[in-house]
Image: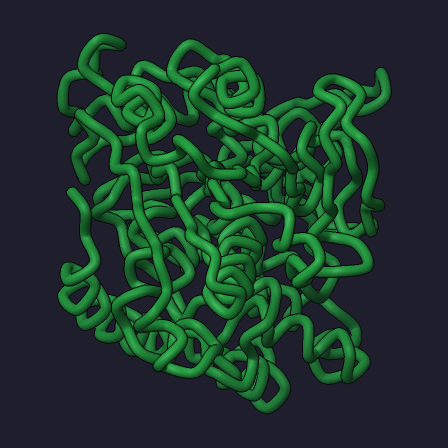
Length: 411
């Protein structure tokens, strides 16, 4: 199922890019002889998915380039090699492979300090995003850009594809009061931008960077665009192999499932397959047969999805669960499923799980969802959550955002 779950994208596909036609930002940088980095002390913020089209780590590429003086590494959540657990602080260390200092930006500090930045002239950022707002790598990028601009340091972002393409825009807005490390950009939950385009928006749109506007205008940011990427392209059309961006996103099935079920399992007794081989695709509710879940979700007429019951294995035991199967990508509104999961959680729970949650858990819910009305409606109306009203409002917002965000498009 993990493979076929992405196969539907071929229905409206453009031809897959040939390796010789498609270049990532790191490939474009290398093809140009690293001229943007010459004569500078370079810091690199990256992780395991930061690789060139041949699968070589950007760390290795820059370390081996005679034109480049790489002096420090910076790691986001999960660390530079992706072997750190989620939500667990990461310590600074010396990288055994390169001998370079590694400064953790997911430990004691979420932002590079002046002492860290004093070592470098230019910060290179090569992070693979998944196209959903609450994934923390774009937050890390924004914080790094802010601190580099304040310190007078140059930033170079090596662009990479949005694996969901550049056309799908969906989901709730993020209210400013709920901005956090799981929501550092006020964009729809599925935003349709590459990480380079988010950086471009941060540079050009006042208020995105939380620094004085005069500092933003003085900031030096260069984006190394891809070659051969088009907005209509999904990941499968780039010719690239997917490298897990974090332990919970091992494959493209999880990339697609993340915006569909992630919000729906924030509170209540729903789970979404985390810890199985199908994370964010298996829908379960404590004490409820999968057939009941499938029937309930099917009856709600959710566009672009079906809900077969499938077997899966956990720790050697065979079990069954409802699977979120995409049947029509063009019709799909990824975040819609989560709203129905929230309503059903109220219907199937002895107490309203949103009303009885602690204030800290309610706050975390709002930080992820972004639209405070959802929680307020759930507390007030429970299973009568006005899904259609929310979806209509979100669609209007997303249309406006899609039009306005063209000013930051690079492709």
